[in-house]
Image (tube, rainbow, N blue to C red; front, side, top):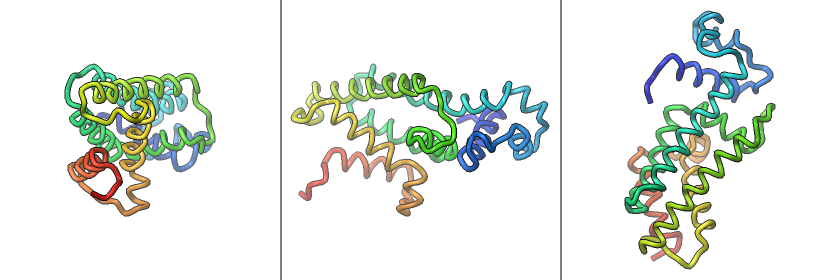
Length: 196
């Protein structure tokens, strides 16, 4: 991720939003935390709502666009899953507060609702892409075909997103490199949970 003023504003705002909530966050506080003037902050964003919205939609759109690109690809499913795991890992490391904010919103544990249609649209796009990735994997004989595709896709998506977020890694004292995280999750996805 390119470290621009725009991205710095979004991550600082996401930190404050995720710690204090939407209502207790002010433009003044965001500006002071960034050590810039409110005028400079308003140069980049028209107000708190615009910053909040950009925190969510920009990140979700990039993630979903990556999944849609992977769904169009004819690469092996394991390469696609490695890309997904690596992408979530990088996002959760480089933008931990944005990741936390999105998690709070999804779990409905936040003091402000967001446009539910917008959120549903992102998740529909994401699930459609992951279903397509899994369906191609089944068709190409790379993964099992005895479980419905939508259940496989949901299980894979949940495993990747849940185990790669910063909160769960901190809580469970999971401290792996990106490569280790990818290797362990791919090994689990390929081999399942049964002892061999």
